[in-house]
Image (cartoon, rainbow, N blue to C red; front, side, top):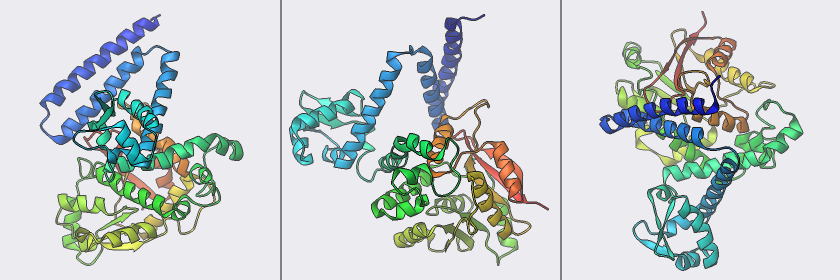
Length: 401
């Protein structure tokens, strides 16, 4: 029987080989997609090696405390605008930064120290602080910083109240659009999440901005996942029907990405369907590249189901299926959860926990087969791309005959 040391030695050897292969490919990479894929492989391998060699006990719990401290100070500095007061080039003294924040110098130095030892900020001399590449993302308006701020709103606030939520409603998956952790955490358990958002306009704006950024940063469905040349031919053959309807398409980034790859798809025959607040934001932005796209406000649920996130998802798909023509194809770009495959994806598991706060979930392939079946659809194919998001797939469906 292998000892723990033998197991650890074997894991380290395997992971070290994977790391070396990924590093060689990274250094030789020419295409951005290849480099990004290698980058993720390197990060995953390093994290796996660290988990293998870290001793249990004090080290691990202290590491969690350290992570919480860094997150707490980062949030404070974002809220106070501290990162914006630090010059992008050069440094600022703790005393001067404290004045700009209306904070004590001693407090400013203590908080900065947490980010300095974490490598997020840089100590200059003995009494000044400067940016690093890791802190620049928190400058106001930076896409990554915007998403991080909303992650705090949507993740940690809900996670903090999650034990109380399950104590009140039972240890089971949320059963509808209301009485979900995200709404419960903000004191309105009887309201759907988007109604809670609408009650706080600044929060709503942060959320919609972050969703647009995430969609723009996400791998496009055209990145080795789906070939839309068939749709170009359809558009030419049948000039009087909509050719592409993006249901829940955010601010239209997916439509634009696909059109850029396949310009034969006419924008004036593309339809963006979204919630009222999102369509309002799109129209207010007046992006000229979206001017020809038809924008339609929809209710994803129409007849609201009684319970269960899978029932809600199946109902949404059923409504879409009823609107499809016999030759229509439904493409679902989503994560497919798989803990047992050759490339289990950590991000998908974490996103699944996040979706739990909204009453949603990331689904396995078997679960997707179940809800599409209930919606009157058949899965034709499930295809992934070559990008760094190992858990992201395009699920192609047609109406059952």
